[in-house]
Length: 528
Ligand code: BES
Ligand code: ZN
Ligand code: ZN
Image 1 (cartoon, rainbow, N blue to C red):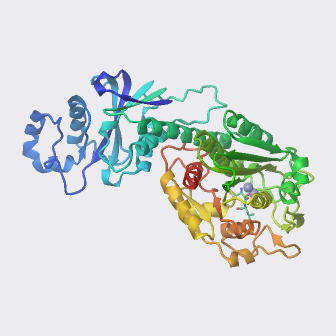
Image 2 (spheres, rainbow, N blue to C red):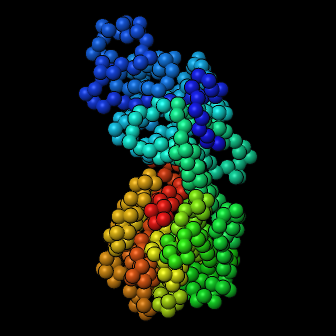
Image 3 (cartoon, rainbow, N blue to C red):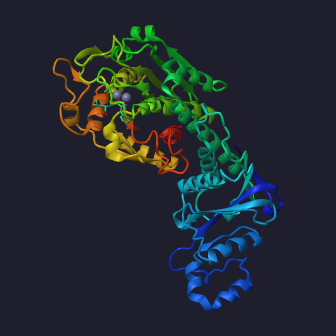
């Protein structure tokens, strides 16, 4: 879908479907204080007798559209079928209005609470509703958006993101690849400014990168091996200023990444260490550093997982995919930052040379680790990546990983749990998530969690010695590979990286979500 902006009266369009926002008047105010301009006098006269009812039913309102469109919508408001509630849609097929064949309304709720996420969701709901309509082109009447304090660029960016995110479907292996969505979305406004173009550009880049992250995650394990992940990263970075380096097994061994390497031993697929570098600021400016778990399939290894649901472990590289997509977005948006990223990529399989419970491996910093459960492999591959990241002396490090099942139990599929002991970093993460429209929740990380990860025969164990708090103890394990002076945060995306479509209309019901790309891009923006 191509998103564009046009300054035009809605009547002059030639579009298959016109999308219009309907809002709700706050409680206590009703239609008697501000009657819709297009209200058909006769209709209202006829309803005078039922005055009480009219007041109650007229809480929904529409503005910034032609009288004909307004009258059409008013009928539905008057008969009580349209309330203007958030994400409510009504499709008027062959609506008989000038400029568009069909009319679609989408509810915003009380405009007082309107933010960019409500716009993103409303737009996604609208695009989803058009999926069965065969509409090839859609227009959005931007003037129907009630006045808000949001800037024009923020509004248009959210609208663009909502539309493009809702369009995504994983159809690579389907005979019928039709996405069933309009090919073009024209945002129609009575005024046009540079901010609108900027909003479309930013929104398109971010949504495309989130969709790329989803696509990497949705590919099955046999079509998304470490080598393929690296190749696709190189391909996606073409034409940008990104420098990509891919280390093979020999280089990983030379670099003394014994912990990472040990996880790959049970697989026939060669591990890869993907290095991404972007220089958008002066050489003296310390980079922001991203690290992502690129486990392209997690069978659990010798501590093998139960077969029910094991197919979902193709998503175990979603943290890595989020980091890759973030770097592509940073480069495409030409942000004035320096950024680096490391993605250790491997399978976790129970082949003959696989890690065995009790094995001891040595990480890049010389720390020894008892592998007491081969299914706790994410922390083993991230340990070496974090040590390497710290050696680059970045301004801060954030990592993303589908690290623990315990995270899914703790927070479910809406909030991504993050762990940091740095309050300043925690505050900027919260701001970035708010701006990006994602939900994060700070989780505890203490010395007691770290104590649980001490080994019996080695420095550390990859399995906690205590019950419960599995996500926090995993975070504490990672922390022991990070230099104290470097601000660091760990994001456990186990609950949010896939199957979140039951909560968010711009995510496929099943499939990867692209979680944390928007937040990570915002973090880079605030670092610029
Ligand atoms: N990739 C899994 C974590 C996971 C599980 C993500 C379910 C999403 C859904 C990770 O490698 C793993 O298996 N972790 C173990 C650790 C345990 C053995 C300490 C877990 O959480 O069960
Ligand atoms: Zn595992
Ligand atoms: Zn895993």
